Length: 198
Image (cartoon, rainbow, N blue to C red; front, side, top):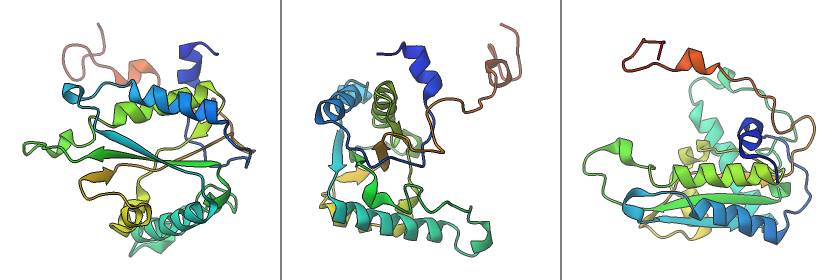
């Protein structure tokens, strides 16, 4: 396995996937990594819907494209151009689609708390996937279709779908690693906002 910080540096959102299947043992290890994440009061409110059925992936792709169009309603000229084989155009052939779901928990009036107990699990999942050479991408644009995704997958009302992650081996022109990031010095302050020296 690669070193941890090499994995961190390799992580990027992948749009193109090979149809090669993800081995069951690898998938289980990636999901196990997700369940090792911290959560508020250790409630572990997550569930993961793993979709490999072609018809269901095809339906998810249709909903994703509908959600993407709805997110640009009123300004269709702003929709970024996509190649014909990105995951959203060919979701049926992406090996695995994972939908992290979270049990509805009280936020005590603070909307910022929503997701705090699922996003660490998603990050663990994505890092574990990258350690195995798998690409992924955390997306939410399909949420513009309302409750269509939960209905499609039979998700109960007391759980919320928090994201959608395609998972598979990257296909050209995509790859892991090499994405540009701002230097730490540009995004870090010490003791107070704007103070750049420690």
